[in-house]
Image (cartoon, rainbow, N blue to C red; front, side, top):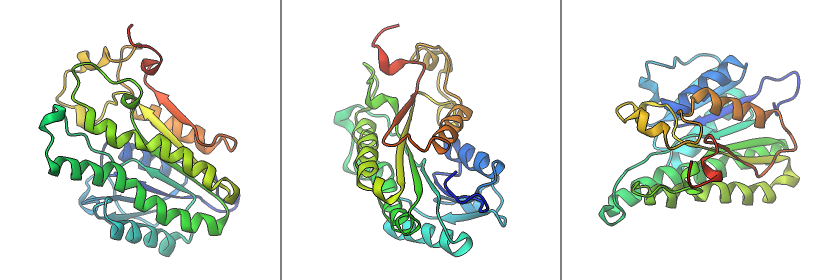
Length: 245
């Protein structure tokens, strides 16, 4: 944890209304963090109830005004930011030549601008604190594309995250800010609820889906490891290491 021993840490989680973001938010609350959670309509969530330890902020994370609003809420309610988890992300599966300008703008908005603006706002406050940790969720598909899988636009947008994290890790290391990435394989989330799970399992050398709890475990490892900086933890059963299994 990045906060002082006598101070409960404060986290911001984007994409917090479902899937990995929801699981991370719940786990942080269970571990004593105070959390600002955001998604487009998170105030209508049936899974999260606002409390003294949880602030819900609606908004499109790809817009700078949302980032400003989210960070302002953290400072107003908790007066610091120790952890930012950029969990927001979308996937539009189409053959490359069928993507429209609207598809491109949508995915750039969430998958790139969605961590750029909020990270920019958060870093301002972390520099003043001289401490902080930023963890962003990418995908192992940027390392190991799959023949026949329509993932090109996802790779364009998500491949920026590990490089962005390494660059920030070096730019702000002297300010006490660490920046890391988690890159999972196929995660068992509502996004894949209607997909063929038996087929998806075969995409990992260890033939099962990644569990949200394993993403959470990686996050807490990074939180507890002050010498880990600029790292990309891949949770994929080894898929990034080989092309066939």
